[in-house]
Image (cartoon, rainbow, N blue to C red; front, side):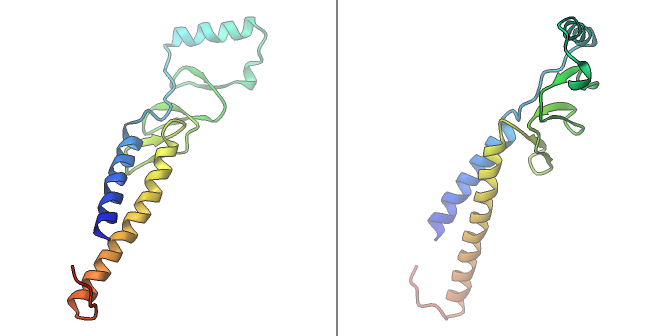
Length: 131
């Protein structure tokens, strides 16, 4: 049980690190001049600007499912949420790592609870296991 819990813990730390340090899909900001040029280009090409989503803080036209995170002050592709535990957004590029992290976290907690139960039963004399 201890080896399984230790392996789960190492995998948990790796998945947490991947979640925390992978770019979630931050869209690059533009200057106001670049944004105005892009807007003019869209107008000249006949695009309906009312159908485009834009961010006035990042000065960009956002793709579908991209939202501005006020904590990170950036637009994120496929923003799921801003995670207070990692201090970063969960988006397009790190969502899979985040899901793996959550699953491993649950498994690690269960493994450590099993270790506590085994040692508690062993110290109470109710368990005849040899370590």
